[in-house]
Length: 183
Image (cartoon, rainbow, N blue to C red; front, side, top):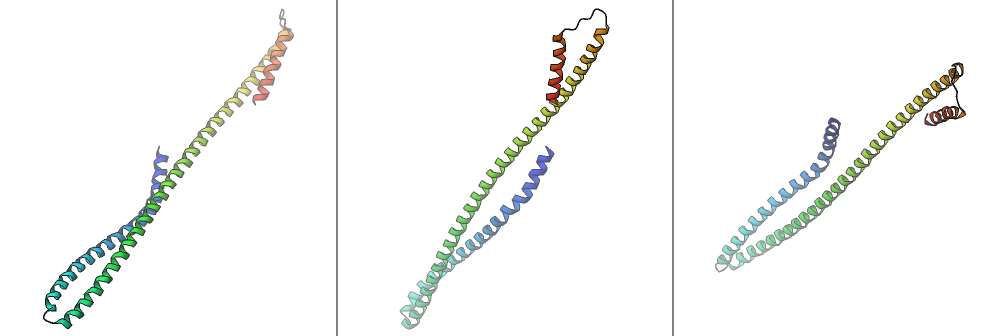
């Protein structure tokens, strides 16, 4: 469990900065653009107020008013262009953020799949190793039993009244063969 926590901690320490840094830069840029947009809106409202004041002053000084109106229109046009450019930039940044989020989601899916496959392979290798050890130890045990039966077989003809059949001898040979195959 602690190795999983350590692994997750290490994985988080690597992935978190990779995902947060672009997000923080994009967020800071968006906040800056929003602030500029608010300032531009405020400036536009101020310019509209000035335009109204200038239209009142037009009756007094036609030449001066014409010059001021041209300046105001030029500024408004520039502001509109800046607003449009800002909106395009915001759209581009939002698209990039969605793309980054999708890529991160895909990477997370791939990591989970690889981790699951590795876990399965580790469990399979562990089971195979345990089964192999058990089969080898069973082969040694059968070899010991066959050796014991062989000794008993050699000793039995010396015991009076013992009668070994060929069937008993073939069983000892079968045990020896099984022990040899399992080792």
